[in-house]
Length: 130
Image 1 (cartoon, rainbow, N blue to C red):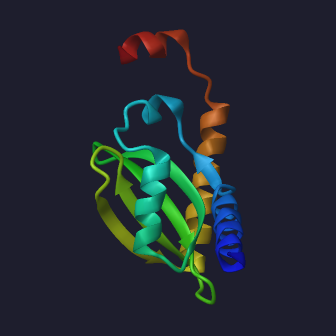
Image 2: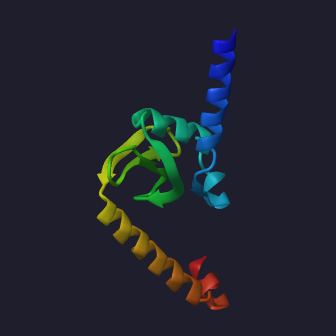
């Protein structure tokens, strides 16, 4: 009975720990996905069972809706990136990113975000996009 209680408490604390990772899930994309982020995270975690999810981003890549997970494996440098198709739940890619590659990617993302923030959308741009 005590062992069961310990497992329940341990399981609950592990679930809580995983619930605290960084999420970039735009609402407009999330409503198009057939797979929930919770289901996608379970699929990604199965691919790297010893890792801890650090972040997830939902994005369109090559016309597909993709959950991109960054998973840190203890005692291993860099991260494992696991991409899960947001429509089917299939794992479409798994790759290791070294710490240097991860740092370059983060810098490029920050630069793009800064540029996007500086470029206000003009009303005529919105009309031309339709």
